[in-house]
Image (tube, one colour):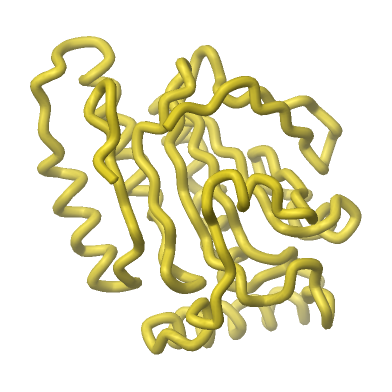
Length: 220
C-alpha cells in the first residue's frame, strides 16, 4: 500500500500536515472518539516520550472521528498534530471499521477501568475534559496504526480488535530503527527486537491484524 499527497489540517493551530513527510517516517494513529479515556491515557504516553520519537525520525499524527470543535479541547496540550475526521474518510480509506468488540472484548476491560479512573481524577482537578454524552461517530471505534515512509510506502500497519489494541511507543521505536536500517544499509534484515516487543504487547492487549512491509511489498 502506498499513500500519496494526503493533506490534513491540525485542529489546534490550523497548520497543514503533509503525509507522507519527505524527511521523516509518519506514525499515523487512527483513534476513537474525542475524549475517549483509553485514547487519552495512550496518547499521554506518546506525549511523554515525544522526544525519543522525534530523535528516531518519527512524526506523530493522530486522527479522531470527531469534529474539530469537539476534538480541540481534548488535544491542546499534545506535542504533535491532531486531526478531525468526523466523516471517517481516513478510516474508510484504510479499512478501519467500528465494532461492538471494541468494548465487549474482555481483554479491554482492565484498560477501560484504569483509563476511566485516571481521567476522572484529571477531570476533577481541571486537567481534562469529559467526552460528550453522544460523541461524533459513537463509542465503538477501534484504533489503527500505520507507519508511512517518506515515499508513501506503508511500511507496517496494525488494525486493533478492541479499544486498547494498538502499538506502544516501544513498538514504534523498534520499527523506526529497523526501517532505518533497511533504508540506509541493507535489504537483508529481520525484526527480532520488534517481534519480541510486539509479541509481549499482543499477549497483554490483543491480537490485531498486523503487517510489515519488506522493502517493496507488504505482508498482508
